[in-house]
Length: 348
Ligand SMILES: Nc1ncnc2c1ncn2[C@@H]1O[C@H](COP(=O)(O)OP(=O)(O)OP(=O)(O)O)[C@@H](O)[C@H]1O
Image 1 (cartoon, rainbow, N blue to C red):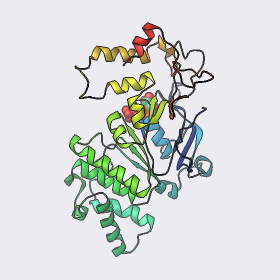
Image 2: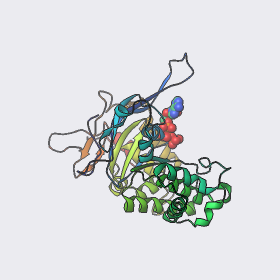
Image 3: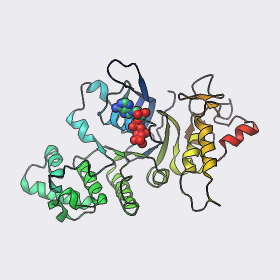
Image 4: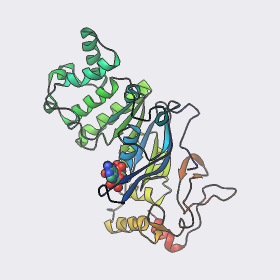
């Protein structure tokens, strides 16, 4: 890898370099392998929200699980506030790492044991973090409930007595109980009713802004990524293919795969309905053997060598990794001139 994704000169909270994960599948004697992460680089600054978007199977959760130490990476490194974690804690995450890096999962019901009252889920992390007296514990639980805009009366209820949105707020409160530096939020709103999603997104954004917590927000949903995140990173087949400031990337997508994802976002300003055949044609143009050799498929432009990141000339934060871009000596990131038929296949 040649390029990092840092946007500021501050020391990043998280710094990932060449992180890889390959799974063996098909049992002990099988030689079949799935390359879920191809060697990715990512920096996240303090208080920054980075959205990781891509279709199902692109490797988003694998990256989050490696960072949460739920999976052991096959290669690469990552640092938390300058500390090389895999080297410092090779056998598994320390308690302090598990406090500093909190994961919020897609299914808020699945992560709350139904036999316990809500108060129980906040008590354990608070005890671990040092609120030990009974009065101190009660105060701390109430403060956490107020941070996530929930009434303290809910502390006495069981998970099934809460709505999905309320349960996800409890999951967020539980993560906050240990003062995390980084939250890995894996599709935290995808199982929620549309009407409560925006509230949870706003809550996460406010918490990051007010408390300087950084966040990796994993989602299929480009619209929510644009709404919540400072930057968007697009993932395709275990690799990052495009990254940039959220509004810029959505307004000027450079990679055919990013354009494909954007084509799936409902857009009330689009004139006429979106033709599903056109979308199928776009999908084919990205993943078919005739146009994209990289990432396990095939591409005329990428077949000679694995593509590297190129900065789009006008905006240094916007980078694309695609064989359709070449680094001319005076104008990095300028698009190669395409033939008419190639232009048709990449046009949105
Ligand atoms: N434990 C595992 N064993 C074998 N293969 C796995 C395992 N976990 C993930 N994979 C494979 O790794 C690839 C990436 O999976 P991952 O769950 O990271 O994708 P994703 O982008 O998070 O998808 P989704 O959005 O559906 O959760 C997929 O091909 C998946 O089948």
